[in-house]
Image (tube, rainbow, N blue to C red):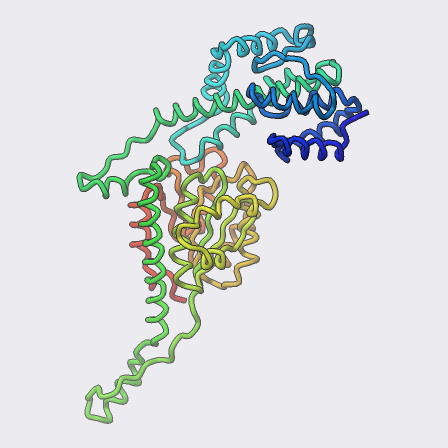
Length: 453
């Protein structure tokens, strides 16, 4: 007899009636593992379900009691340590056994040593780069040394029940090591924060020169409000340009001829016909993991512009482009961060930056011709190719391309950065890591020169 899906649902309802909740995700994990390992024994199924749920003492005792009441099965007291040691470790992998036993005894020195070793020796990390802590963790998890360590849990000849315990030990070890690595990453980043030299002015100006990546919650709140206002200013600037361009220009020769009829007096000025074709402005923002907090400032800038002027189009991308113009016009300013809670909706393939695919889709979806494009992104493409055809098509599609890069310029074209290929066709490429640089960029844009067709 095994624990069927129907029986599990009944047991979950029984637990709920007794004030104990079994999370849906835990039930799903159990069922997937049960199918994968072909668990036919009710005993093994109950034990795995018991191991899967929270490990605090109180919940263990509650669940143990409920299992007995429902299944009439007694869960034996298990080692309360972090890892359950199985005989197969003793027989097959002494090194792994020693590490797990040390952690059970509260000795975390080996865990910390491994974390430091992985950070310092296994990846070429510069923690001043404006990317998230999770970005660096994912880089470490791709390393050979990290993967070799967890391979020690694999390929061990063991019983089905030992396989359950081993899998749980592996998952628990991964959580412990990942958390330890993140702590060390944060420590290193705090040590290596780039010292900025604020102007000898008021504190507000000093904050405006602070790297977005190193701002705290209160500082971000203030800077995001200022960024929103910058977006509005650029939108107003854009609107004024269109209004002026539609007035038409003075027709000098006809005005002179007309003045001769009145003895050279300019009684009537003659203008050329108005230009009714509106210039197009498109903004594209990278919201992938490597962009960290800069994505939030980028989308806030988009919001300030798009919410004030409908002909401006806004796109975001990870591994494919998505237009969010309508979304930005429907939400309130304090709801901008909610866009990032829907991050998975913008993933088209594997969730890693893909400028080739994203820019191809932008060209396809953006129906403007010979317009202006502003890109906010670090041009890091996860070592994917950027084709010459794409560069040529972008150059053909847009009259002017501005590129805002949140990385220090010294990191451009290092590692997986493809900035050099885009710089060839950009009208202007600027480093923008703080509010002052963003403000200077907006101030310097001459829309009359840039957008004139």
